[in-house]
Structure formats: structure tokens, C-alpha cells
Length: 57
Image (cartoon, rainbow, N blue to C red; front, side):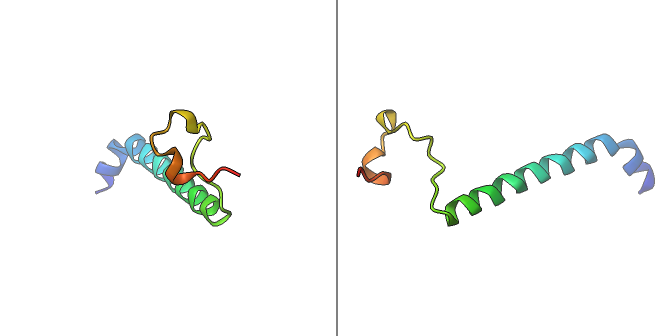
């Protein structure tokens, strides 16, 4: 088992870093959703669903 870890340590570290980044993105999306922010970029002109998700004021 130790030999496996030593031979794959770089892959394990990269996997942990990528998992942490994905986790941070998910947490940020959840926090933004709770604050009422949208993940939309705001350019509704080219969006096929512009009338469904954005209410013009």
C-alpha cells in the first residue's frame, strides 16, 4: 500500500487539489444562490431562454 502511494503521490496530490477547487466552486455557487445572485453572465440578447429567467424592470 505504501509503495502505491509513493509511486502515485503526484496524481494523488493533483486529485486532491482538483477536488478542493471543485468544492470551492460549488460552495460559491450555493452562497450566490442564497444571496439571490445568478450564475448567468448577464448577456441576455443571445440567450435562448432570456424571457424565462430574467424579469425586466
